Image (cartoon, rainbow, N blue to C red; front, top):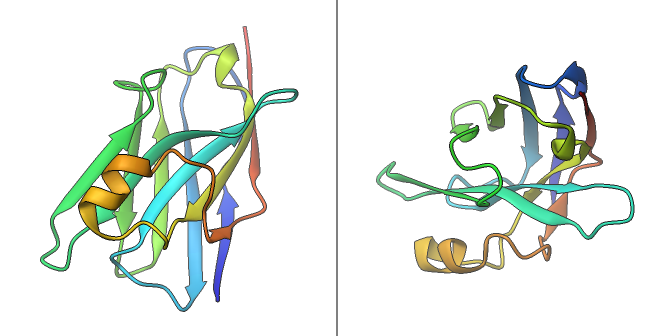
Length: 133
């Protein structure tokens, strides 16, 4: 079992930044496909950013088109913490943000091809991000 706990959400004005954190505990693996999802009221859950770290320490990151250039996903493997740095926030970024471990996606090809699918093995409870104009 893997436990995930998000933090760092809040209410900000458009154009400002937030950094979300996700602390992982339990049976964690550095090679898991880790993903940030979000879900706005009345909308489907969508993948925002994903990251895969290989056994040699090489990292691959993936982003939804809507956040490319504004959001950055990173991982502190030693501390088992996943981050999402969100810059230039927009009102349309308002949503509940979830950290997830998609262990069913194996290797960089698996993570890279399907990271955005909301079928993760483990989910956090979410942290709310609200962006006002």
